[in-house]
Image (spheres, rainbow, N blue to C red):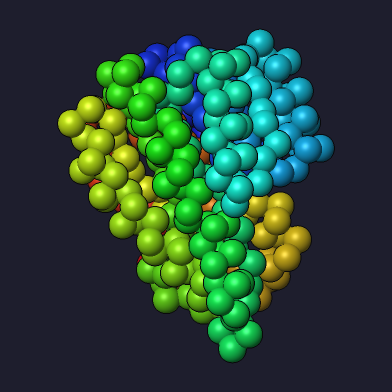
Length: 255
């Protein structure tokens, strides 16, 4: 199936910051904004892949910069966002994408591991919002897209700390949409299903797992990262100007 995707004139020249932009869904989000001729900043821990993505996008003539950052370190996050703003201008779009869905047995979880999963999958989303919101307020508005997960909607097991953190993303979205709405800042959650990233294929995709999941979906095709990215660019655009405080599912009807 060949897809023809939309162009959103309202995104041209806008500055966007994306967390976890070096691989997987994040890298596809970078490409999607590059196709809109936005100015792109991203943060990631992976130096090699960050440079590869930056080189790829630079060849298109799109402004792009990245910062190497462990988002569990909030001071480092703030510094990275400040540096990207100085390079690219005030961000009026934030995509809180970074996460890790590492599997873990509930019997083995320690308080330290639980806290680390929340730092990896939830806490940085709030502090990223805190870092960009003042600039968005000054600019007169903006769009914040938080990445959730349908793992907890499906009552998926095998990663309780991850699923709990991802469930909390929806609460963060709802409360921040209320707090920032008067400033015309929209806050939404994109909820991916099982997305066929390289990481998923390397670690967990087997013929049996795919067929079992496909049987739970309404649509027969497994989901490629590009479809998550397309929902993100829609929510960032002016076409979604009246969309806030909501969940936008990209899961092929698998709840």
